Length: 203
Image: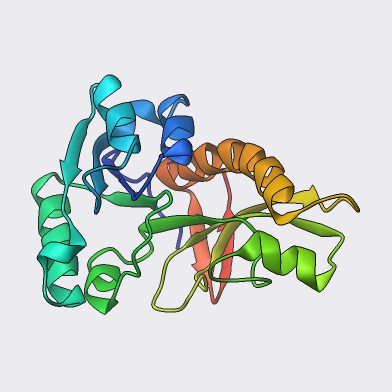
């Protein structure tokens, strides 16, 4: 069964500079973004949200004794705002079962590798050390696994002989800024379904 268009109420969760947030704001996705939430009060991406006239909210994880309590606070804030789609953009906290269950097939993440290769942190360094010739970008749904949800789209980035982890990360980031808005548009438009692990868009 195909998904109908998702209500255009998007939240973006960040922890730092918010470069992918800025790419979303600069795209046609911007009108759908209702709130930007950070677990760090000093996240530079909050200023990008405020400059764009988007609500910027801080919910600091260190204010909660347990991760589940932090997840509950996030879910409550998102539900109060009628959020239908959550985009993780450099959000450096693992989300637990409470959060994932609240937004099934409605949490997106972007990862700097061609998953399932090199999940977790330092994906670019992993790619260099492994000697792959092609890495890239993956936008995927979030589930209880580590970078393990159904893949929405991927874009390749060649690994050059002269690359370091830093130089590869810079080139991957350019592709991230193209891929994330495209993936969000696809999900918001509806007309897609998930069969097992396979995401298929028909629009």
